[in-house]
Image (cartoon, rainbow, N blue to C red):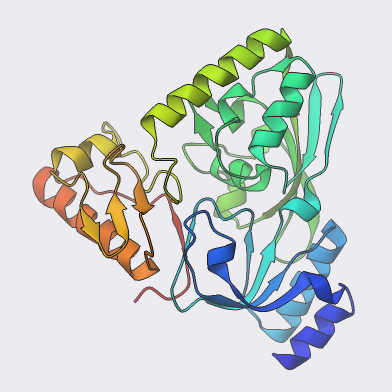
Amino acid sequence: MENLGSLFQKIMDDSRILIHEPMSMHTTFRIGGPADYFLLPQSPDEVQKIIEICSQNGTPWFVVGNGSNLLVSDQGCRGVIIQIFRNMSGISIENQCIRAQAGASLKALSKEAMEASLTGFEFAGGIPGTLGGAVAMNAGAYGGEMKDVLEEVTVLTRSGRQMTLQADQLELGYRSSVVKTKDYIVLEAVMRLEPGDKESIRAVMGDLSRQRHSKQPLEYPSAGSTFKRPQGHFAGKLIMDAGLRGYRLGGAQVSEKHCGFVVNCGGASASDVIGVMRHVQEEVWRQFQVELEPEVKLLGDFS
């Protein structure tokens, strides 16, 4: 691992190479043990070189944004974490198109769209993630999805090849895309919006924000919706109907405000969260024969 550090120093300054970095500092759950290496690239070229170094040394690597849909094990994660976030978050607007780097936050993008009097991205203003993760997961809320606005996406393959995909090549479905299935890395994306009235857009965003705050447990750290929506059902309602509202293990709890969320109500470990998730899955299956599939991505050892 010492040799890896010297290789990374050839392409990045030391301030962006963190060793044994606690992942609890980089997830919205505020949970997670240390990463061997936590790197903060500031260009697609650096991302590409990091992947080359990892591949040549047989070192596992994983890309994160702001950690909003992620649960990292208490033991942390071996290898290299590549964070594409604030160092790669540029946004530019030309006519009705917004071009942004993968680390741009959805909140910042929605604000830029509003300031440019462009409508169609209001749904994403309260989603606590980055553009890269939103593309990979085809993120959506309140009737809108990324597939409604994406025009093209530039990605890096696991072999380090850069390519641009048009919207019809992205295979966007419910919480899925070709980016996710082929494990591509999003570098940037172009979204096409429609002209609108700034004050009307602001009003819609304000209304959606009020709805989100009234219905979701934003006062506690979480990773967002814990489970995907099962076909023909709503995960939160199934969990509530199973009598699991407020179910708690250690510092992790099924939210009393919205049963679709498992929250960190104080000092939760990853083991606590997994324990709650597995109990919820078992009870929902036992009572309703519906399988709940995690929407939260797991990183590290959970055996």
